Image 1: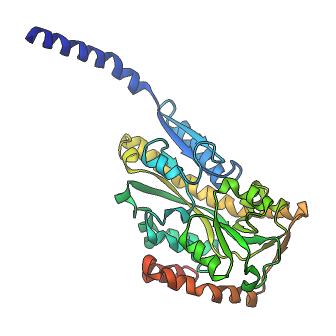
Image 2 (image 1 turned 90 degrees about the vertical axis):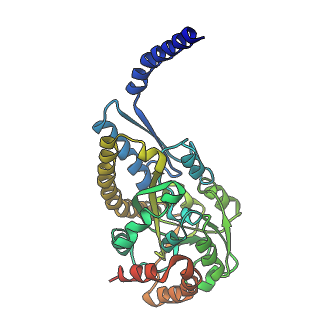
Image 3 (image 1 turned 60 degrees about the horizontal axis):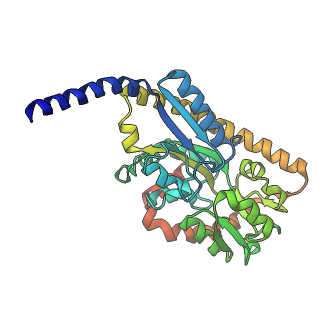
Length: 330
């Protein structure tokens, strides 16, 4: 038995020697899945990350991008990350309440005055802490990408909070967004992003909230008569990976990808505002949607109507975070 056993070990060792080099020669494949079009800030960011990563690590890193829910949609992408079927995502910040309640701060309506205040908070110590707040769930936050601010749209003018009464609004799977529309005595309907155009077209929902780039790229302006420039909250994304995947990368690759992401993040956030302005101009040119601008008094009325939503989630988010966010407005 002993000679046979030794012979078997020799065969296994020979097999490993033959197979291992081929594995070592294989590039690290990073599947980057997202649910929006390639010509949105998130889509452009994913493509730029692919370009720079493959240039920096030729033959060692291969990035595959999957836009428009072509690989995984809203409901499946987080599961895919945690099971290793994708390696990077950039979900909307509204998607993380299941994993970390504090991230709901970005959904609180009218908390941030503008996107500059959002970005100021994100680079603060409190903002950076949120990136690392889901490690116990196996998730690492790598960066914040922003797509400017959200505006409400509907097939009737929304000038006062009471104008939303009884309307059905598409929302992401977020308790804060659900409460936001219920506070307006509207009806929130959770719906995957890929289904929104059809939902608006068929009347399953009457309105939604999005930045201009999402409205234009998904052709929502073709089925929405009015957009009210509420600018009530950011539509931000957190670029994430799994702790298992990220920790398993060679040190030089992990450090290089972190540097690339830092550069891409600056470009994404700079481009987002310019892109949203261009898409707003295209919507105006299309002539299918009227854009309504609120007066300061009207906007104050919306803000006062939404303060109870802040109070409702204060315990889950933390007063320290809400206060830090408000300081970012200065």
